[in-house]
Amino acid sequence: MSKKKLYRIGQIVPSSNVTMETEIPAMFRNREDILPERFTFHSARMRMKKVTKEELAAMDAASDVCATELSDAQVDVMGYACLVAIMAMGKGYHCVSQDRLHQKTVENGFPTPIVTSAGALVEGLTALGVKNIAVIAPYMKPLTKMVVDYIEDQDFVVKDYIALEVADNLEVAALNPENLKSIYKDLNLDGVEAIVLSACVQMPSLPSVQAVQDEVGIPVITAAICTTYKMLKELNLEAKVPNAGALLSGKY
Image (cartoon, rainbow, N blue to C red):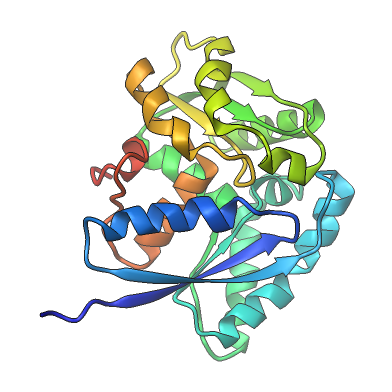
């Protein structure tokens, strides 16, 4: 019997985030049903309760310590689990964050690839080869508009978007993912090539992704799906997970 490779997945998580540590491992576990690699998950937390620009900036400053702590565990890849925190720091900031956190792991003697959910979303859309998208986000309208502007700065066109306007981060996690099967129908999908069903790794979405994609006939992704995709790419593993939408179909 061949030996199966075990990978350590590090996650830099807002203190009030409970979804990244459920949805992302769920996708890796589903992958284990069809492919030989195995994974363990290890988190470091940074304080954040309310999704406001001020709390997000303070939280982002704490990510350096988290990267160093996870580097102590010699994880194989790290995922920074807050899309809006990165986007709130300015356009293109995912590149700055990834480089800075990677440098922290270099300084700690164990260089580690860094994946931000913001950067992963951009890379996921790029991999799909789409331009015109629609977005659903849980944030208040000003933060959602900031996310839209950030995405458009990366050369995509957000044809329509929905802001669910939930400020408390635990309330975001408590949203029923099944509701997305009806919420997305309020989007104008004329000319849209892909739907970002959840532009937030705290907003649960995985149970609805495949169903919505099957219904609309265009790729459906989420921030968590894109983060999983990019992590697998950094590990040089096949990006294939059952029932997780087009990006994780194994085609990309």
